[in-house]
Image 1 (tube, rainbow, N blue to C red):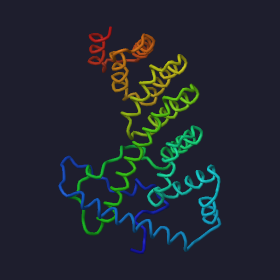
Image 2: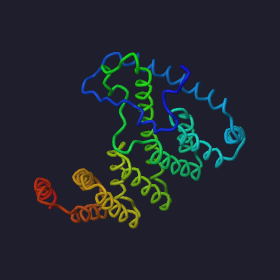
Image 3: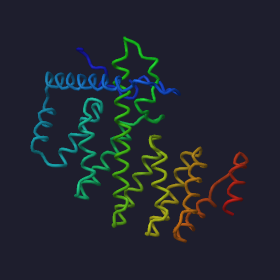
Image 4: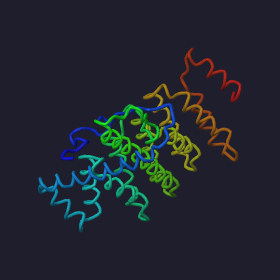
Length: 285
C-alpha cells in the first residue's frame, strides 16, 4: 500500500462506511485482527510520509516529546490529533493517561483539553459511534474491505476510549473543591449538548449532581438541564425520566427532592405530552 486509506484533510468519520446491522455476525474476531494489521500499516505509512516531508513543526514536536514541558507536550498532542486522530491515536491515549494522574491540576487540564478535541475534531455531530461487531459484515467486498474494517475498528476504539474518558470525569466530580465540580459539570453539559455519543451516561452524571452538597451547584444543574432542553426539546421525556429516578432513590436528601420537583414543575408541556403528563400525575403529584 502506497497511499493512506484515511485522508488527513477530511474528518475521519466522513470517510467511514457505516452499516449498522440488526444481526449478530460470527467470526468477527478474525476481521478485527485483520483490521488491526491494516491500522498498523496505515500508521507506519503515515510516519514515513511525515518524515519524508519534514518541517520545522515536526522538528519542534520531536524536541517537545523528548524533553519539553507538560504544556508543550499537551499542545503537540492536540496538533497531531487535529491533523488526524486515526494516525495519531497514541496522542489520544497519552492525553487520556494524563486525566488519571495524581496531580489534580494536570488531570483537569487534560480533561478540558480532551473535551475540546472530542467536540471539535473527533466525535461525529449527528450519530453515535458503533462497536466493531455492530456493523454489517455482509456488505464487505474485496475492493474496499481494508478501508472499511479499518474505519470500523477506529470507531470501536474511539468509543471505548471516550467511555474511559467519561469515567475519569466521574472520578473528579467527587472532588472536595466546589469550583472543580462546577467546571466539570459545565464540561459535561457541553459534551451532552454538542454530541450524541454516550448521552445516556452523561445525562445520568449531570442529573446525579442535583444531589450535590453545594446548594449553588445543585441549583445550577437545574438551570443547565433547562438549557439542554431548550437546545434539544426532543430530550424532554428522557431528561424528565432521569430526574424522576432521583426522587425515588433511597436516602435521597430533601433538598435534592425539592430541586428535582422544581425542575419537573418547570417543564413546558404540550398536547402531545398527554401520556407523559398522566404518568407524572399518577406517580409524583
